[in-house]
Image (cartoon, rainbow, N blue to C red; front, side, top):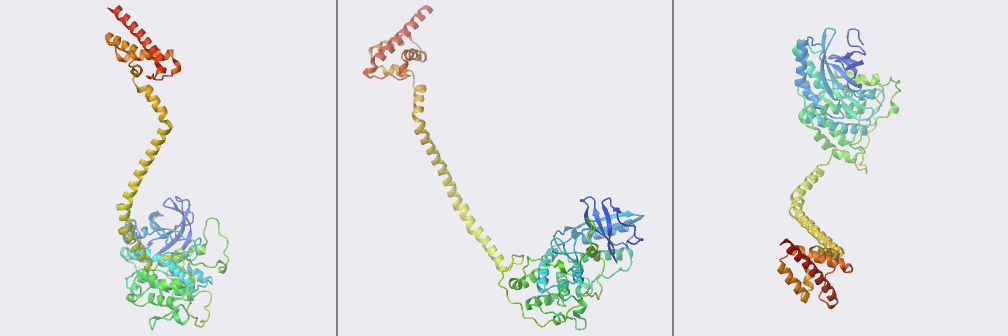
Length: 509
């Protein structure tokens, strides 16, 4: 690490970011690998923002400019985009510094894979394109243009194999604006990347078509192993890659349109590119769900790194947010001579795997299904089936209740009736059962003459009668001849009760 820098390993910034090492240095500042002590020592990247801007007040204005112009980057949350955590301002050795904190992505850049001798086939290139189009579609929907797509700014994530899009060019644009407005100094480095930047972006206008242009150049560089300058005829202002590369005609046509000189001649959105690739996806043996798998055996052996510390070579790519790619970079391995023209890829009988690129017909069928559901099925359910089911439930409950009542009556009815007869039938029924007999008439006359209360006389007589005849078990007497002796006994007991009552009344007088 340069001695002129006050930032060194083990230095802790903002009371939480412990510097591990410097990853690289460019025209806009240094880039460091750090540990976040407040997030379980998670690795992160600290990028020095506009180091040419000095002074607390001026740096504050630079921070405000970043929040205003690039604050939308904090809202990007995608597994193939490093998260923008925060912009911190710290004071060190009498000077103030601004650092942009980002998520650390471990893995080699695609340019490093080329330098290691990795060859990319047409299937690999198509898989990479299909993996990146949804990422661009996401950021474009947020109003963000990357502005700096190239093999340097694509990392193959070590654990998932997915391509990750790093180093948004908008950050460099804001840093350059801060330097120009706040220091009146010339911009320290170029903002465009030769060969990857379309003409409209050089004049300050960038759109989704600009990112698609740079993505197509990236695909060609990976397929050929050559720099963009070797694939472009500056005099004719045309791409000449077809002289050394043979592709499926459909794939080649898509790349040609993405590389059109004029912005209006290119695809205007990622959706248009995906739609143009649909026939190729259906016939080609690669699907959009496939990730670009790079053979590990082709990579040279790397020395073992200390625990928890990433490899230095893979990490240098994080510094290239601030470094412009050279005009004439040559890969290590020479390009083989042009191969003879290969026949167009025949349609493979393999159905494509499920992917986010769906034919329009499928979405129309989904819309039609929803329409039928709302207009036919749901009205039938709520207006017809639901009331019928409600009525059926009520009838079922009523039927079950009737069955339960009948069953209870059948099993417990006789015992219940006997209990009711013993509990509810008036005690005078015993006396009524012996009606018509002479003794009963005499008892009734004496009862009326003494003016006795009904509620006490008959229970008293019945209690004594059944006490003398326990064999009856409370049975009511009938008018049958066999009950005549019992009726006579009842009358005799009634006379005794009346005699006792009469004597009691005489004593009271």
